[in-house]
Length: 95
Image (cartoon, rainbow, N blue to C red):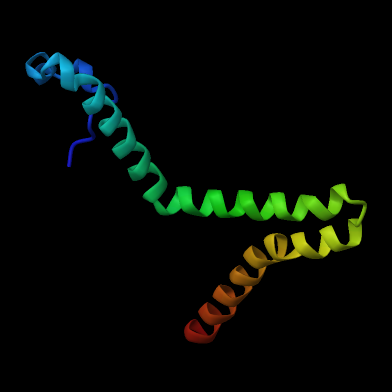
């Protein structure tokens, strides 16, 4: 599937869109583009990690460094734990 052009006004059919409908079509196109971007898995993960990081920063700004560290530990340890599980599973089935 070909990627749509970023600006619908550059499309050849844009000249046939009635001038009264151009603004609404442009807004609908932009809204659909944002919905597609936010619907991607990568974007959803980035948004959730960002929200979690902001929530972890709240105790840090309140002067509770130990609580902020405990809140950040899952972000730091989960990739290492995932790799360890993968490695142990691989070792089990290949040796």
